[in-house]
Amino acid sequence: MTEKPRILYVEDNFMNRMLVKRLLEAHGYNVLEAEDGLSGIKMAQEELPDLILMDINIPGMDGFEATTKLKSIEGLKDTPIVALTAKAMDGDREMALIAGCDGYIPKPIDVDTLPGLIQDFLAGKREIVAVTEERVYLREYSQKLVDRLQEKIEELTKANEELRHTDEMKSRFISIAAHELRTPLTLIQGYLSMLIQSGGEATYQLDDNVLKIIEGITKGSERLHTIVEEMLDVTRIESGTLKLHLGPVSLKDVITAVVRKLKPFAEERRQEIIVADLSGMPPVKGDAGKLLQVFMNLLGNSIKYTPDGGRISFSVKVLEAGEVLAPHVRSAGRGEFIEVIVEDTGVGIAEEDQERIFKRFYEVKDPSLHSTSKTSFMGGGLGLGLPTARGIVEAHGGWVWVESEGYDEEKCPGSRFHVLLPVAAKAVETLSDQL
Ligand code: ADP
Image: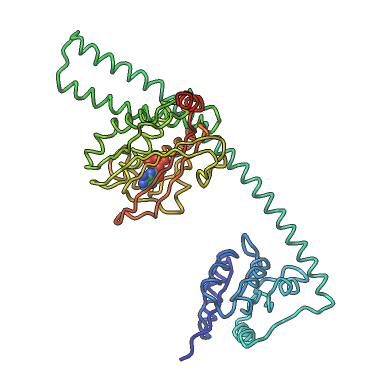
């Protein structure tokens, strides 16, 4: 049995599609459907139909443009494309042929003749424009294309402006929300510390159970405080108002402090944290508090995205001036840099997400499965940790990026975050002076 010829019908009107589909299927054709030009092109490339029926007035890319595109695709060059459209104005037929169509069938459809016409085109029938008319219509068609291009560019520019405005409003909202949250939070934290202090000073004796509850509230409010600060940092980074208090910072001290803070959480998850020998590393030029925040985020993430029993390691190397530093760092040659690598045996990150995770609010996981937790396995956050980390490191004149073989919850290929920070020039001088 020979296979049924496959016809792709590109048409936005559902009723028309159904009518033609029924008619042609009754005559032994297989009919595929697409609702607009772009999906028609995609489907044609995937399905390689024997013939394409193209409505001209379809949303987005119109039938003329879709046809021109289809005729430029290897594998579809010889596929007959027949315009099937309501006659709008004189010259429509010629325009369709100039655009690349092999035939033109005006609507309304004549159910008696359509199957036969299609059979003719499948058998090799091709309509052409008279040579004398070709030039006129070609010029008209290219003019039409340029008009459409201009229209689309104007639409895109407007849409971009609107997006920028929405993005600005979002940033403003985050900033206002964070400030509004900070005021009552400061109050809560103040009262909590008064409670604890007066309890300690035995102004009144606090019951152990009450103390535990207060500790719980304190922990919660500290977490909230971190989130609020993260929100504020992101808006400061965006507006370029992040202030750094720069000085020589010992990365050894920063990393030791971060590991000390988060070790209990790693231990809960039976994870091992290995820190390479950091003595002898020159200090970096940085803001100690902000760098602490960067490494808290990276280690926190490694704990979160590494299954129980995994391993996380910190290693450091000094890069000489002029060495190729990183895929994204253009400033090679400016001076010495220190590179810190935080490596884990976690779920890893898919190649296409490796840049996106540094964008605000980007979470790889489905947000509907979101569970907020700082350290539990796969517990999500606001998606602000890495953008903040990159913003802070960038403000230091450095860069942060990630390498991973991909995402796999079973095989756990792990991730390697690299942080590049400039060595403190003054500190280097002092060191070399001593030699
Ligand atoms: P979140 O608050 O969601 O952790 P981040 O900005 O810190 O936000 O991270 C963004 C996303 O990057 C995370 O949701 C996670 O999917 C991915 N990610 C970050 N660190 C790691 C890691 N060490 N291993 C695997 N995925 C990670």
